[in-house]
Length: 352
Image (cartoon, rainbow, N blue to C red):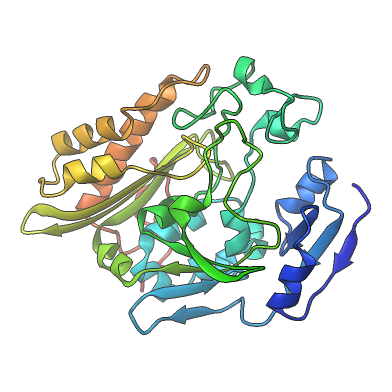
C-alpha cells in the first residue's frame, strides 16, 4: 500500500475541497477501497474520511411521499427497516442477497453504488487491464471470461458492474444527489455509471471532489410494492456476486399490466434498464408468453464477449422467472435465501 495523507473534514464543503484533486479518494467503511489499496490496484495519495460528516446517515420521508437515504446509511440498517421493506421489497431482497452479514453491517449506501468491478484481471496487477491502466489492453478478452458482459461492452473492456442494490434502484428511477465544486446537482442513477467505450477507466459521471450525499426514491416507486421482486443466479447461494440478476416491479389493474419497471444485473458495466421490454409489457396480461417476449426484447442487442453465450439465455430465463414471481405478488416474508431461484418464500419476517 502506498503512503497517503489522511484528512477528516468537519463539513461537506470542506470534504469536497479536500477531495477535489484527481489523486484523492473518499473513505467511508472502506469495504472495497481498502482491498483495492492493499492489492496495489488503487493508489490514492489522499483519503478524505467522511464518516463523521453530519446528516449523511439519515433516512428521511419526503413531503411528496418519496424517500431520501443518506450516503452513510448502512446496508444492513436499511435492509432491516420494516417500513422500508414494506415499501421497497425488491430493494430489500437485493440488499440481503449481497455479501455477508458482517459486510452489510459495515458497507454504506454510497459505497455500494460506487463499488468497482470484480473482474479477475482488474484485480490482478500482473494482467493487462484498460480500466486499471488505460491503454494497456484487456487480458479478459482472450482469458477466462464466462462471467463477463453481454450488453454494452467494447473491445477495451468487457467487465460487469457487481452491485445487487443498484439493479432494483435503477428500475425504480432512483436519483443520486451529488455535492461538487459547483454546488449540488441531481443525476438519475441510471445515468451515473458509464459504459466502457474507449475509456473504461471513466466508470461514472463524477468529477474530482464530487460526493454522493444521498440517494432518493420517488413517491411513485411505492406503488409497485405489491408486485416487486429481485432474483439473481450465482455460482454459490451465499456470498457470491450475480452471474445474472433481474428486478421486476409491476402495477396490475383489472388483470392487465398498468405499469412495469425492469432492470438486469451482471450483464453490463452498469445496471441495465430494459426500457424496450417495459414498453412491450404495458397493457398486456401477466402471462408466460408475454414475459418470454419481454425477455427476448430485453436481450435483443446482447452478444457474447467471450465464452459467455449462455449468459444471454440465462438472463432471459431469470427475467421471465422474476416477472412471474412479481406477478404472483410480493411475499409477506423475505425469502429464507433472499433473491435465490432455489428459495421458498418462508423466511425472516421483515415485512411486518
